[in-house]
Image (cartoon, rainbow, N blue to C red; front, side, top):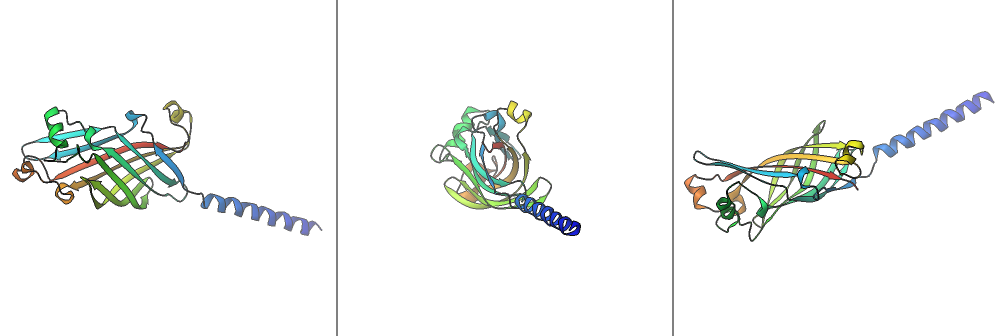
Length: 206
């Protein structure tokens, strides 16, 4: 009788532990929204470097949604930036950037990246493949990204964030001519055909 009772307890404990392990391992992906209402949390920069002129432009107009599974470390999603809001520090250059003679943001302001494959490399480091839309044209892009998951706590709540938090940072290079951008200044070597784009943003699941 004692042996039978002990065996039943062991079996019950094994089943309970197995159910808990299975539940943790198959946690469903959660949807996160970029905290676009708090612009100080998000930034995109663009950098152009040539032998005769260098500049960095920036904007806080970042929005989007993602799904992320903190157990499986997998995810997907898309992020959109208002290109027309990029400020290079010189009003004339901003106007030129927005014109049809350069990046055409006045007509097509949306810069959008949609992730199609996310592969964890190690720790919080990921390799992300997806599609970038710029100047109304879409091309494949691959980038390295850092994704940090933080469960809701006093610090995240003090920052005005509800629920669990993702902090994402990524950087990639864009060849403008691949997106139909043509500019005599590029041909002359005053501005670069390559832009280094960095995006950092925070998202929460509530």
